Length: 275
Image (cartoon, rainbow, N blue to C red; front, side, top):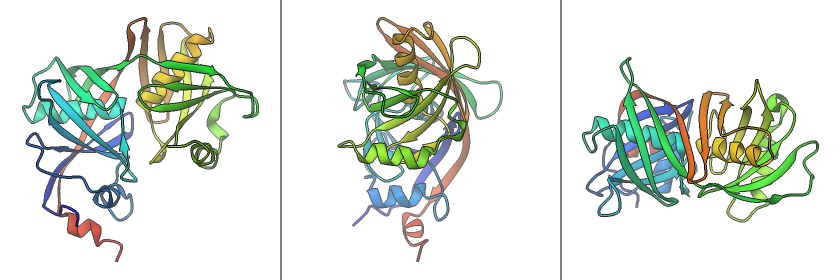
């Protein structure tokens, strides 16, 4: 049986990539996949790309992240979600800005956090670790160059014409289904301007989202290795622009985060909303 105790959640977004955040420093609540799916449902639930549970980090880090995709599956890492986690954790008094660490399934990550001038606004940068670039893959995706990139979670970067007319849902779902464990798929073009990319993304366990932090980092790393951009890249996602800084010791992702709401939820209500 799912844990149906009442939940206090906050909703946040980073460049339109939205998350429900549950602060659970005492590790008392279990996120059942059925509850996660019901919460993330945009018609019958609250609506979100995923749910993040914030835990104490123990000896490993200041905090820990339990991340679930909208379909209830476990995910390793999220750049936009980490900024949402940071905002919720600072507001709850679990950590003090500007710098703290978060344990994820992709490793321990450092966050630099600065509150914004407007209520509910902030800016944050996240240590994304190193990109592991796979070899260039055969060109089987039309005009698009293709390679895999590991950001602690798997990505397939497809570089070519402006992705405005790409069937992201159809192609993304097909490419995800063809790979064991699924994969995130980035449709990327150069520009506008130098050291910039335009991106649309299919996220495994979610579908097309307004932005993807790990996907932006993966796309920038691939484009730099192809010799197309420099060490600082502005990645234009549909929901906003994220800045990716590439260095020998790793990648940093910077961007805004906004708090949307405080939400009290009875899981029994969202579980029964379709009936």
